[in-house]
Length: 210
Image (cartoon, rainbow, N blue to C red; front, side, top):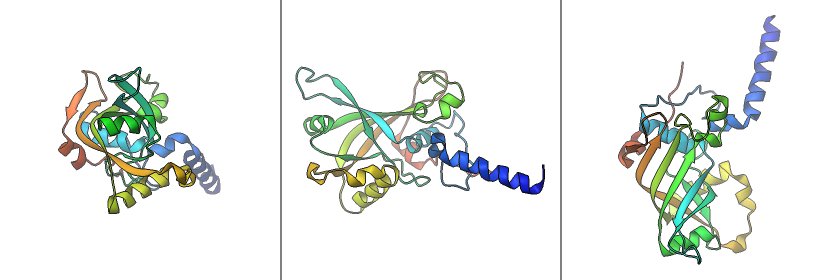
């Protein structure tokens, strides 16, 4: 193949990659990355948290006939703009949302995210339930944020969920964060493993590759 042909092929591959949904699971253009090794649990947890745009959040229901029982709901999340994750899942919420009404009674919740939400597991032929299809499970509570943290949450969420900008203002939206008290990680055989919040926040999800 000629040099000109190689350039055209490279450009076409780049366009295909940028348009692929799985490409959204990566950091900014120009960085080559891969999922961290499975034994680096904190790094994998941060990788999953940053790769996912939504999460399943379980609350304790305050609504009959489920009152007092677990209730799970899917919510959009972001821990920061692509390639600049903080590790903190931020949410854009309204008190009209049934899960938020649960949280007003009991702020305790759990949040789960999995690479099955990206193209990774499908490309590797991993079933979503396979331990190799990495997932992170967070325990903690949901807290409203204000000031500079709310500004960061706005940037984090609106950069990855631009539709939010036009959501109806009469819903009285507010920014919140998932306040992590415990991290559980499953990314390999041998069962779920615990990661402390300190280990989680000190980890870096991406490492530049030469």
